[in-house]
Length: 145
Image: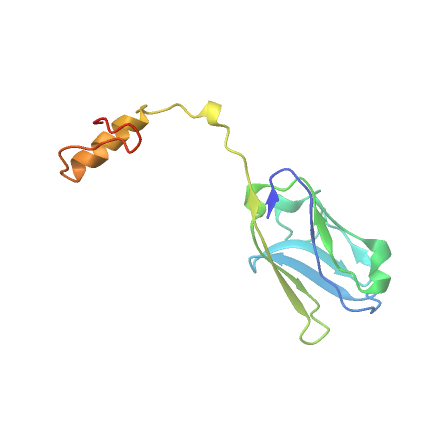
């Protein structure tokens, strides 16, 4: 899990195999194109079918391709980036990697107007009333609530 606005690396690696001339494709939820690398070329800003959601925010690690690293970084994550990601090597049999990404956000409580306010003792009284109990005593003072 990452917080919205932060950067996240999605790992994908073939053990010490040079993938500079390989084809690998990153997808989200099986239908959104995230990043495509093909035989030394890539263009994460204008590859056909790439989802607008990722334009300009996704890159890879070119110096790591020699060591089999096909990981990508998503910058400035958004809540909508949450989902199931796959890194697929279609020309290398049985080489597909799955990652679940959860992007969490903050709730600004100052922006939420309270519908009503109720004291703790009032909440307890309503709960007790719903149980049809006549009298409740405070466990420390012994006084009726």
